[in-house]
Amino acid sequence: MVGAVRLGPLALLLLAASALAHYTPDWESLDARPLPSWFDEAKFGVFVHWGVYSVPAWGEWFWYFWQGEKDADYEAFMRQNYPPGFSYADFGPQFEAKFYDPKKWAEIFEASGARYVVLTSKHHEGYTLWPSPTSWNWNSMDVGPHRDLVGELGPFLREKNIHYGLYHSLLEWFHPFYLLDKENNFTTQNFVKAKVLPEMIDLVNKYKPDLIWSDGEWEAPDTYWNSTEFLAWLYNDSPVKDQIVVNDRWGKDNPCNHGGYLTCHDKYKPDTLPKRKWEMCTTLDKNAWGYRQTMKSNDVMTDVEIISELIEVVTFGGNYLINVGPTRDGIIPPIFEEKLRSVGSWLSINGEGIYASKPWRVQMEKNTTTIWYTTKESDVYAFFISWPKNGVVELNSPVPTYSTKVTMLGLSGLLKWSEGSMGKGLVIALPEFSPSIANMKTWTLKLHKVE
Image (cartoon, rainbow, N blue to C red):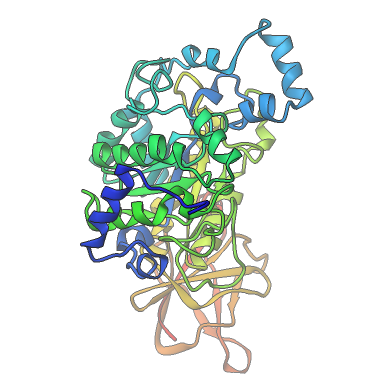
């Protein structure tokens, strides 16, 4: 049959296994799988983009723009800094990770308040941060640090009850098998059989991640990637079948349609409440995901920008995944560490209204200041980032009862309130503004027993 796809032994094994299991390899069945509860409860995670691209330190797409697009700026950078004939592979031995301390990383992530961490096990360059048997001489054990970077981080995260996620790119820009399949309009699966499926199965069996953050799907359909067969195995027979969470990047038509939760596109942030669980991934360096040696301080998100965006995402039912790019030596730049610790300090006071919360019947309202809402059990939390000059916050949406009480997280005692005009909402007298209150940057009111 012309154009038919012949599955290899590995894919056939996956099909055979999934045929006997509960979830079948089709989107109707896979999309019906309930999302493990830990992911929605977590709310906040840290993304880590780290690889050979951290050596030239001009962004994670360096190889593509240099030798794929032949961008003049990238070519000039290479001429000015490296000898003629220097190849991208020559960066590999320079990716030494000599100061990589996974215990220190885990301590920073714990201090950030993150409940999950997603590490780039392999980006589009194809270099793997673990000794992948299908990435010979292009992995962190054979070339560079001679260490299993993926394997070393996991135990330290789990000691701190932080869920461990692994990013994995399906495509590899310059892998000869991928280029051959691409030339054949993806009617052949040389790359998938030899590289993609064995690699993902190896990651799952070896490290037992809680989350697989798939990417690099956009050039080929999910039928080329055998995505549904892999996910059926993952949900039915893998060692992580009960706790595993996946995103929606499994084929060029899948984002925002199929998968465990929605990412849709980078920095996705809806302005209405989606029907499905979603996540916003963004990056502290506004201009790149991988470490950039030319990064300036004003390229980095401010504390208030991070916290307000986290709040906004959570109020609309999402998770917030914020990225850092370590240096080639494995150091999380101090400015990134400071930002993460600042978020963690805020969450240590206000996390009650974030973690395990749910969207309320109203997500936000604008009056004298913008208010965002979440709810948990019988309480409603109201967040605001602008302290009103008159020391009074007006909330139009909550309906008070005779037993309503109002407090501010981080402070003791009850706040005085009265009904709003025409008996609608609450007018809340805030405590006197002080340096300690100012240091909170963003504030949370807890409303007990409102409707």
